[in-house]
Image (cartoon, rainbow, N blue to C red):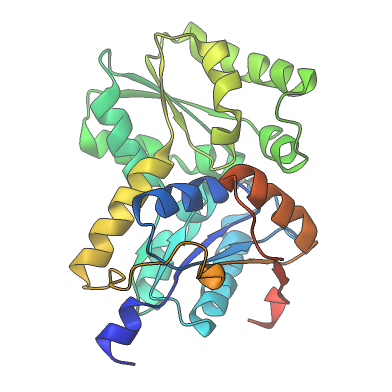
Length: 278
Ligand code: DGL
């Protein structure tokens, strides 16, 4: 494939479920000409309580699937998969692979004034200690307070965003971090930006909430530029319906409905993939 043909290939994005749509949304905003193929591993969500070995196996399968669809780069739009698999994917596959943790950590290091940063995520992400490691490299004076919030991802997948149960669960999880006087809170799971307003209310206006999606899209654009892979064919609104393609490992309608509400636009039917084949 020539470099020009390659540039116009889609970016592959994946998550355990619908959370990565928050990253896809930001990539669409910052790079409106790009084509995307999204994979939500809805048959195997959540990843948060699974072992490194299992998440790595899933991430390899999904990357092989995305490569079979000729993607030019892969965005791991999942903190858990980034924590457990990013380095291996970058070594094993011959295309740019971008994660969500470094971009989010950089934004948090820039935002904190008192050097006390809270991070919420899955058990896998928090247990891996990756945010402590990355933030420690960026600024050793920063203290990191991690809190695993395993109930939040299933509540988001269920669509219970404004439900009193979800609000109560958020209240309980965040109480500990409020006591630690953090002035910055990293939403270290791509599902959590869908609960942003509820978390803002809980933490109060003096705490900066970091959604790594914005910085991940900035990083993605920079990496594509470095590899001379930025799309050079402007999208024609309304005439390029296939620009965004959604794939899942389970019920396609669930993801389609969610994608339409997160992206605030109509999307075509999602395609079900037998991911174990890859
Ligand atoms: N959205 C994912 C993350 O950022 C995974 C959540 C889960 O599957 O437990 O970690």
